[in-house]
Length: 73
Image (spheres, helix red, strand yellow):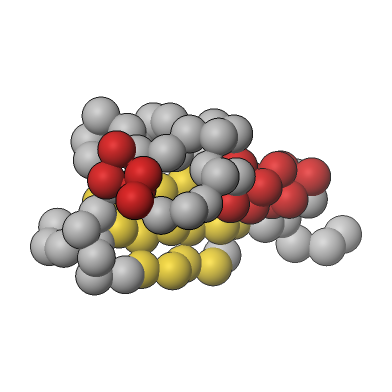
């Protein structure tokens, strides 16, 4: 398992279920010049390796992303 946490603004609760969709950008993220592909590509890579990726807001500021991959057989 790999966990990455930050102390930024977090993910708006209404956007949390959509952040892994291709081209989706939360309204606060629209000031960036990104295309909304980064998290969807990360999810695709993890799923191709039979793993899962999830995101949640921290109790304080920021968000935590967790990637779980199966052990090699």
